[in-house]
Length: 170
Image (cartoon, rainbow, N blue to C red; front, side, top):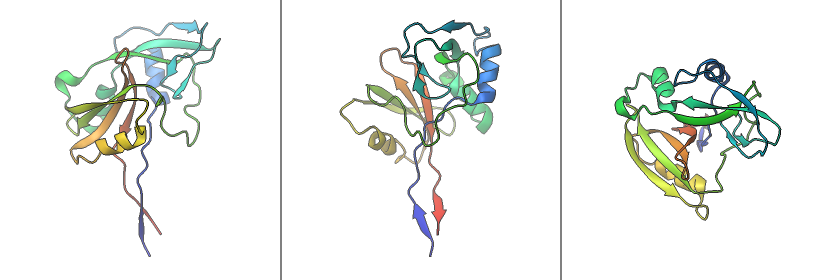
């Protein structure tokens, strides 16, 4: 008997090969400058957790849609923006296995993109809402290929979620 498992929504951290490039020269063409995080709490896009006091981190310029478009052949045109993201200054091993969605306990914007890399819309999600349900709702539109999760305060990219792939189980 064949059943269809529910597709899982997964936060996608910046991958180590991309991080190595960003640490050498970020998407604005500048080398990363490592600092010791005196306070902690910076949202790290390499491992999808907040930094701890004393960790070595870097603030780099990152163009997430450009990187996705290079892999998929999309042409985002003017939607190819870049912005600041915090990452560990050295490789960290990425997110914990099975970590799920990250940074969900605050106001977030879910920005939806088509397979061509064009914005299809956005939605504000408040801390009182079911974040995963709001994210699932974004993918009810068959035109949505990926969603960027962004912070409201600064508009910064936090991570992307790609359209879930239906998994066949037995």
